[in-house]
Image 1 (tube, rainbow, N blue to C red):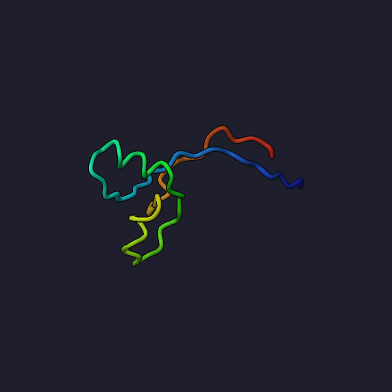
Image 2: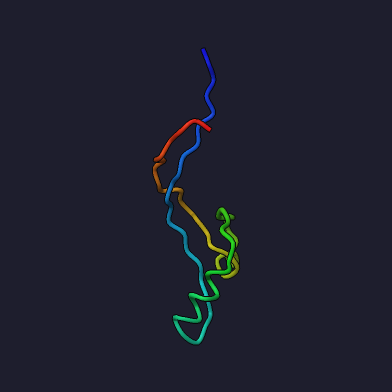
Length: 65
């Protein structure tokens, strides 16, 4: 049998918590944050990065890499 390396795209849900004076300011701050996998028990992580607790998407656009 031949092995194939495949790649695809997936959309997942992420969240972050931002302290700001307005929604516009909060969005601006959030746009500069990195995305991280959720670290169980880390109560500060969401105030520093975008976090995904659940990889809830499904792969699509699957192709050979």
